[in-house]
Length: 113
Image (cartoon, rainbow, N blue to C red):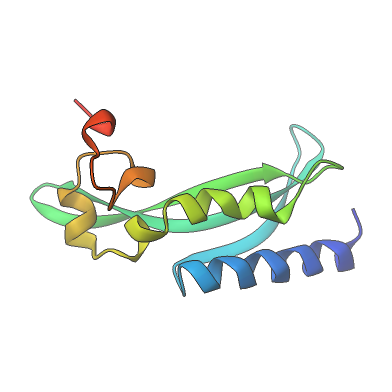
């Protein structure tokens, strides 16, 4: 994949996620030697309770950049988690369900036990 094409794809994906979760996701491309493919990556913080303190852990959403790659599919992951990612770190730690269900009227089906 050409460098200009990758850079354009990164700018497009970054613009979409910045609209949903401003400043919370860093989008970039990375080459994977194992698969000989480029991957679009969205790095973001997820918060957890570690030894009684709220601690951020860097998580990544990866999508292979092949002929099936589509920015709307890549960014849908973040769209599903917009309310969760825009919540405070303390609210994220207190939430017991799946991040995509944060803010729903009933999240009982998504409780992590």
